[in-house]
Image (cartoon, rainbow over all chains, first blue to last red; front, side):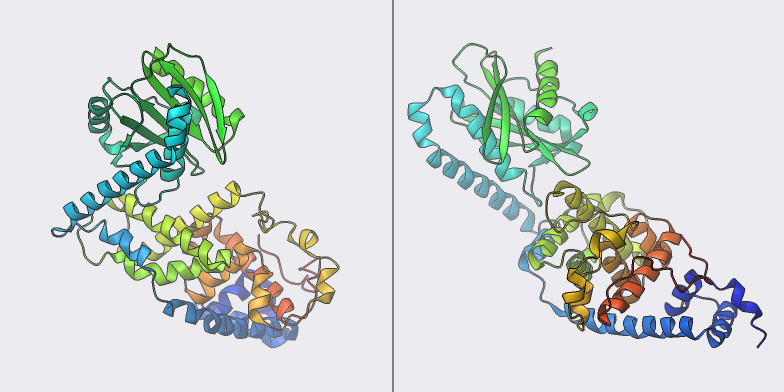
Length: 259
Length: 180
């Protein structure tokens, strides 16, 4: 026992020794080192016992029953049979129910307030419902952007342009059709997301009676919206980032849409 | 649609994803929320995924870890969020309260580890990921994985033994080169 291998053993070697990731030759070096250094040997023994304790401690977590909500994520992705159309119909019905609910809760507003005031409310409500959605944030994803734009343009009744917010750090997630209280009762919602997972939605609906407006701001609870009317259509950009963060993005949207 | 293999390979990984998420968050609801998010993203990225089935688990762990970190950044105001860097872990968390704590319980000790250290112990010591895989999950160099593991183990050991953490974890072991 000359102790010669001791100088080459590092803390990383001890770690790898405990995790059994060392080649046999290096293992022998570490063992020779440990034989000469009781403090290091005690440390390694404690680490080994700790690893066993950790495995025992975490083992029961694997036996927890998987929540149905998690398996449902896969059901929607497995159109092996007649399931796919059924799910799609279920999703559409769910949107319908939400629309009815939105209409019901918004009814007081509809009679008393001028139409344009409902714009940020409808937009914000829709934002809060769908921006939290993990499974179905959009009906049509950005991969099918052309289809998305054609479809929603037809339903809303104007040639929609989808502004690019890449410069602002937001990519298009996709969009969906929503009920609206104005015009032909159809609204389009486009969803954007940045790298931090923060989402913005652009809401567009027809039937704005009043004249064009400039930018207006409405904060409602967790989300806030910049909205404006242009050529009979109402636009609202909604997000949860706060007024200062939202304003430059809303400007970019406005400039691209009115260009 | 792109997903045709029932059951989906990811489904078999759900228990492990939940366990990892729980190790990071230590809250059942937050953990499951994170797993949902992770699965949705994994499914969305499934078609473009590269790698064989053996690499599936680390790939999923990496997505989950990434989502968790995004949320950490998003919820920075939350009182339990901590800086993610390993550096300076001593001063910010050592204080008078340590002397009052009786830490005999592994779970209580784990609760006091920084989330990244706790997660790494699970990945390596429990899940058996290679250092390279663990490094990719946490987006850190392999050398940092090993030094972080050493720190996590020393720290956990002291917590379980009921000792207050020392400010200088390297003291008394100066004959060992510290690998960063």
